[in-house]
Image 1: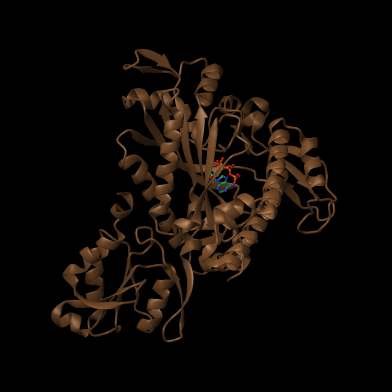
Image 2: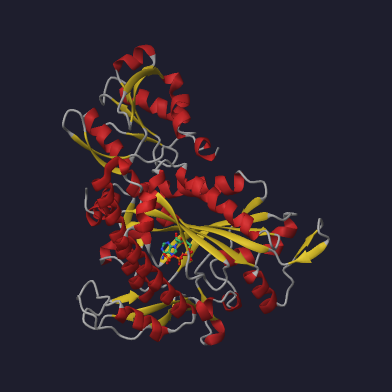
Length: 511
Ligand code: ATP
């Protein structure tokens, strides 16, 4: 099996070589954890956005979308709790001078124990073969039980210390677990401190506290402050949702792992407003709906798992992550949170305005409860790209690198290639593009041998390549090649639209 770090490196260099993702301001040696999306990356990103927007807004008559400003009134962030509580506990290693999130160090330690359990189970499978009863093994094997208990103990202490903001307790836990710095290998730690993740800046020309504003750390608050505007102007009836795609900013302590954790990133969030008391039903509903949305892409169901939060955010009464099997292992891709009526109530209190809904069926006013789904667009991008990136050995022993992107998300849907640069073939190829370009992003390619051109299209995930040859001029037929099967068939030019559309249309993902 390929080493995980190598896999991530390979994906990063592939992304750069083919114009998906570049380090930002690279001519100045880049800016830490900031990336630019290139010509193919922005297409892929737009397609992911479109898949999300269509599935949320277009497929639900009770969900509408908005686009609120990044800057918001500073009181927003006092009300939401971000000024006081949007902190990460940080700790430095005195020898390597590296900074870590204390909770992440502990979680990584727990993950290592989990791996031990999995190894034990694998050993069991090897030893007992078909007779292996995994459930019983997990419930009874002494090593598994001991490790499970260890995990529970650590999680309990973590929940307790973090929950009470007991930073000394968090420090003691790290010391007790004998966690060492992965760089220096030493346990020479500083104390644990809190660090606010919001970026602040000054509004206008007046300096001083009164003019300090923040770059939004989440898009959700733009939805909450517009709750009543949308409800009234759209005549929305509960339950209903408001969706938004937009940039968010967090001064992450440790930003790394490519586009997984950035300081400027994009979120796709939806707040679903429900009757108080019905939130758990909707929480379960959205957990399932969002999981299905991911799985419909065909990246492999085994690559997803749910992780229920131990440490609930200050606003939530239930929360789960959908984790994806990234090259670095299973990590959070999306969060589904039951946020109660916390945000709207806080905004009522700080603004002095009523943010309530009159429920005609109950004949009563109330502050709705909220279930949120929040997925990082950049993490979606990394999930799609890394799961699609494959090195294949073909039957004839040759190799190819292919991106088996879900066709609906692929940047180019079809490449049109004249066999030679003469005899009117380029003109014919462009004629075909002129017919298809209203529906699909097409690429024209006439350079190098057909074989090389196929490889180039494989490497950027184009689902179809169409070759125009001399026969095309006589009978209006072309060769169409499928990226995944590499099968080539001769078809009529007039049939191209429906052949391509059938495979790349987003409709297939949405039903
Ligand atoms: P993490 O625990 O990884 O820091 P989080 O729990 O703080 O994430 P949320 O506040 O729930 O994240 O944000 C919702 C989604 O936004 C996450 O599931 C993730 O996909 C995305 N996201 C959050 N922070 C970042 C970041 N720094 N870079 C890229 N995407 C991010």
